[in-house]
Length: 212
Image 1 (cartoon, rainbow, N blue to C red):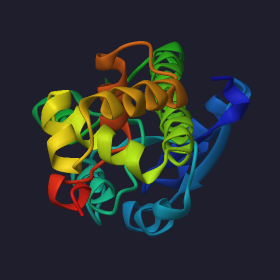
Image 2 (cartoon, rainbow, N blue to C red):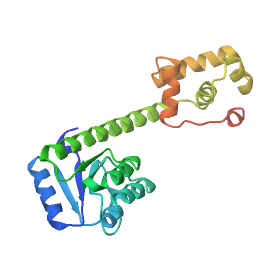
Image 3 (tube, helix red, strand yellow):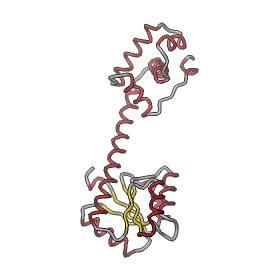
Image 4 (spheres, rainbow, N blue to C red):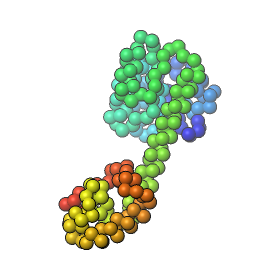
């Protein structure tokens, strides 16, 4: 992911620090947005997309650890880096457990922070790709007939064709035909790949529904 494709959100309660970090990152080519408190960022976070977070660990309204936990709680987690003093390493480890990708000890070289942000952006790229994959899989899934979805449900559940046929009151040969058709529509080259696709979009259709 290119530097200009995402926003680096800097959260620090000290204005000189915010401005210093923003200047450094802007000069390095990043798009930067500053936030004066963890609370302010938390309020804005649910509406933000394609961003990564650089946050101080110790802030008066809430710690960086608590910020990460709350972001996860409102489904707004993003690749994050925490900046810490040497004495706060144990707290930084807690931040890692809360979802931070990295922590950087003060004082640090400019390149250390820049490299950490680029690693965070790579994680952002991976998440974006996963989202694109899920959207493509869902689009294929939407093309399946109701009967093909019922057969897929049985396949994902690990049922043999004979059991699927019994549940649906059709012949095993008909199950094979539906199975072949749905494999083609889903563009799955193997049974494991088909199951992985179904799990990616959290496909569910229970056997009771399938037999109706």
